[in-house]
Amino acid sequence: MTLETPRTLDRYRPIITEWDEFAAACARPLPTDARINPLRSSLESLRGRFAPRGITIESSAWDPCAVRASHPIGRTLEHWLGLFYLQERVQSAPVLALDPRPGERVLDLCAAPGGKTVDIATRMQNTGLVVANEPNGRRQQALLTNINRIGVWNVTVAEYRGQDFPHAMAFDRVLVDAPCSAEGTLRKQSTLRDGAALPAIRRLARIQELLIVRAFDLLRVGGVLVYSTCTFAPEENEAVVSHLLARRDARVTAFRPPFPHSPGLEGWNGTPFESGTALCVRIYPHHLDSGGGFVARIERRA
Image (cartoon, rainbow, N blue to C red; front, side, top):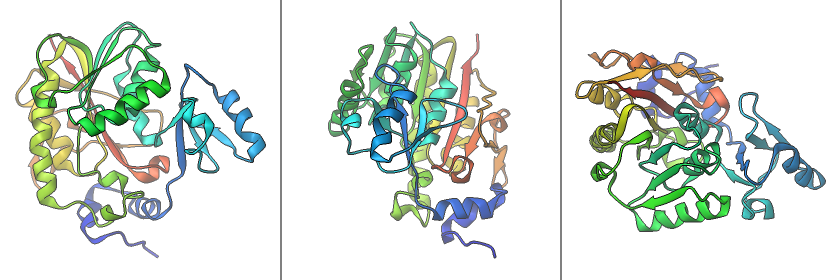
C-alpha cells in the first residue's frame, strides 16, 4: 500500500525517489536527538549519568557527539548544566560541511537559537573568533542563553540584519542557516504537515538571495560559505544558490556527508539552474530518521 502525504507536498514527488520511505518517516514521531558538549562531557560520561534512570544514549556511526536518547532528556539537570543540547541529527550537517578550524574567524549570519553557533565554537576548541549575528532581541536571548550554558567564550554576538552586515572584516568561513519555510520540521510542526504556502516560499526566497550574496561578499578569497535551510522547496534552496552563482565568482564544492542523502537539483519546473547545483545535498526525513534539510558548500575563488 502506498502511503499518502499531505496534498501540497505532492509537488515534490518528482524529486523524492524513495517516496514511500519519505512519507512513512514524516508520519512517525520525531526521536529525541541531542549533541554532546565536548567541552564538558563525553559519550561515556553521559551514558553513565543516564543509565541508572533507564535511559540509553546511542551515538551515530558518523559523529560520536550526535546522540539519540531512548526517552526525553530536555528537562534534566544534565541539560541545564550544558553537558549537551537538544539538536536533530540533520542539524549537524551544515556545520559538518562548514568544517571550522581552531583559530579561524567564522561568521554565523543567522545564529539564533544558537545550536550551530555552539557547535562551531566547540569544534574550534574555544579558539579564534565566532561572530553570532541575530537582529531580533527576543531571539538574541535564546542565543545568549545557549552560549552561556554551553560555556563557549570565543563567541561575540552582533545584531545586524543579515543582508546589511557590515564589511568590517573578512571571514574564513560563513554559515547562512537561512530563515525559511521550514517544511523539513513537519514532524514537530503540525501546521506544516500540508507543506508551506507558495507565496511565503517566494517571499522568503527573496530574503535568502540577499543573505547569500552578502555572506559571500564577507568571505576572504579562498573562504568557505555554507548555505543551509530546513525546507524542501527548490525555490529556497538550489534557486538561491543559482542566484549567487550567476552574480559572483563562486563555485559549489562537493560535500559528501557520511550518511544517506540525495543530490541537489539541476533545475525545477522546466527552469535550469547554474552549473554546480547538483553538488548540493538534500536530506530527507527518512535518511536520518530526523528532519529535512538542504546544504550547499560554496568557495570564493581567487
